[in-house]
Amino acid sequence: MSQTDTRQPPIDASQPGWMVELMLDPEFARDPRPAFERLRDGPPKRDELELPGGTPTIVVSRATDVDQVLRNPKVFSSQFGSGMGGLGNDRPMIPLQIDPPDHKKYRVLLDPYFAPRQMAKLEQDVTVLVNQLIDRFIERGACDFTSEFAIPLPSTVFLRLLGLPLEDLDFLLHIKEGIVRADGETEVHKMAKARATAGQECYEYFESALDRLGREPGDGLLRDLLEAEVDGIRLTRDEIMDVCYLFILAGLDTVTDSLCCFWVHLADNPARRQRIVADPGVVPAAVEELLRWESPVSAVARIAAEDADLQGCPVHKGESVLLFVGAANTDPATVEGADQVDFDRSVNRHSAFGGGIHRCLGSHLARLELRVAMREWHRRIPDYRIAEGAELIWTPMLRTVLQLPLVFGGP
Ligand code: HEM
Image (cartoon, rainbow, N blue to C red; front, side, top):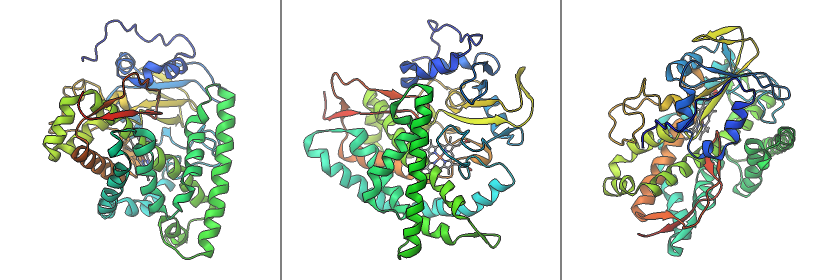
């Protein structure tokens, strides 16, 4: 399908609140690409609506503009400050909401734990886990992909990595849903309240988890963080909690979102599915292409540290800037055949993991999980479709489907 949809009117950025309206549009959550095309038409666009405690928002969508902002952390800061990230946190999340120069010290400390060589060591365990999950439903010939595969896979891997008990998973997922999706609330004040409540639960959980780790033997990343040093200085307890707060959001949500986006796509596109079944060697390229195409994390946020101009769009100090990496990934100005899903691309430099200094810490872990899941699933379940009559409920920005009933076997 071409991205050009002549039925779509241009975005009317003169109407305050147009961006909020777009976010609440279920069609935007399901397939944001037509809206992305309209957003790329012209320079970045302002939404003058000021949400409570917020500012006007500048929406950036063209690949070169997104790149310009991502690579200029001095002007476009990630330092939202206390509570301003809108995700219920009391302090900035580390390293996501930290600017240079401090940002670097945290990445120097964290990067080695998530390096490709470290992640490759997990491949065997992830393969076993994927197969155990499939064992639970394959005989049934059907499953809810979201709750039976896409949620437990990355969550289990991540809890093991952190050294947290698997029995805590349901509680951590409850916290994560409260922070990321505000427990499904759509009214601004109720959303803020749901997030603040979940945020406090998150801090309390990690307070006692760190206490426990201090008393009991064991291993895992969290324990390593208690002892890790940068330039001879240990992380404070608050700093460790601020890393954990981000880890719960990043580690428990994004891979789930990606799996759901990918499997809806593959269920709807039998030829692409069959290609993976016939040639598992295509899996790494298929993962990259679906990351580009689906961009499960559609946008990232910044705040202007000084006045700026983005291709003629004024940006005032203190204003919010929203970067649609999903729009950049499908921008025909920089991506050849941007509106085609093509597993045979020789070059695929997408921004699904962001760019610049805040580029995703967990990208190698995410890739490993997505590749193993795609390879093993299609080896054992080559044919599947979305259950007849199922109505998929998509969520925007961190794009996922809340339930994905799949039926195995041909039509
Ligand atoms: C397919 C899955 C994933 C996607 C699409 C994704 C996407 C992103 C994006 C777009 C950013 C940039 C944010 C910004 O510039 O403001 C980011 C940053 C980050 N991601 Fe991921 N992510 C994924 C998986 C993970 C996982 C599994 C982890 C677990 C550790 C993780 C940890 C982080 C961290 C810590 C940052 C902040 C890096 C920094 O500020 O230096 N991500 N991710």
